Image (cartoon, rainbow, N blue to C red; front, side, top):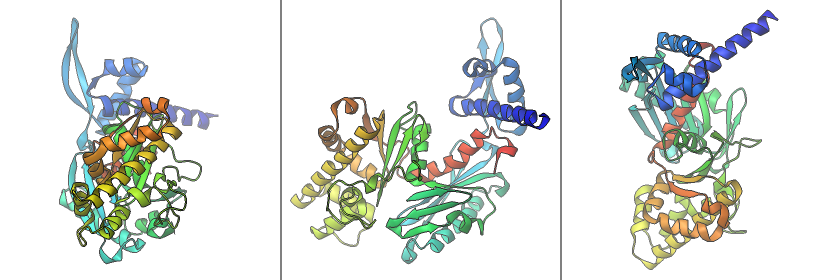
Length: 399
């Protein structure tokens, strides 16, 4: 009984720390009085927990404001310099490693092209392990201040004792990515699907802020989605929810990299689009981003036909998301999604309207990601950040 009581007290303390730390992180600066009013915790509990967080270095004073007839109220905020976060984006052509402070200000970046090694898992691991010291030394930070390393990867993540990755499009079947990385670093690791981590970042800091239900569509060389329900990622029973790119838009249609046919990715993913563009006379040899920008600006009839196909297929895919999830927002991100959306968002939305049920579509807005084309690395950095906030910054709650 005493041990159960001690666990309960410890858990309550951690919960209170988490509640206050989250409120300060997302809504600060706030006073102690604001925190008590907005969280429902007693002024004494707020005072005690805030004192702990200040002593730990997680919270700092941020000036004061006057109060009606009383003493000025001291404002509090999370301390951006408390620690550092690393976000890793395992993309189609490169591995991006970025270092951030606690406020997610980028301090250093390493851009590591995959080259001829492609998505060989050993090559990817080598790039990540090369990128970590590059950004840590590049920003001149103490490795002991790294709160954690978030890694965003394509495919299905099996969250067991160690993260295992399944991604048919790049030939990964049961790759023990976390174990492979653990052999080369002692830093805390958090592995998740790139679209899911992007979804969390957009809900916290981008176009989804202030909303609880949204779908973040990640369109690059391939296609995925992060489904956010009641503010949290929806993963499904096997962790594979969000594989939107491999929903069927044409039975018996174009072959997809996953081995099936007629997948959405085979019609709106940049790799498939550019294969069609080259077959229609588009330039060969340009990198994907330049080639897709060329396709979107090309005045030829062949390019116009391809763009019409992008609008109709992407619109149909968005309509499927509307009909299935009825989100408040659908947010289009990824480097290709931002290029396509910047050039033809209106046409895509018009097509989605034609395919979607009228009532849920009327309740949904479609817009572009606010965090930019490198947002997957930002999203990956939110993985250790979420763990820090959930644990209330309590060392006993960290990995």
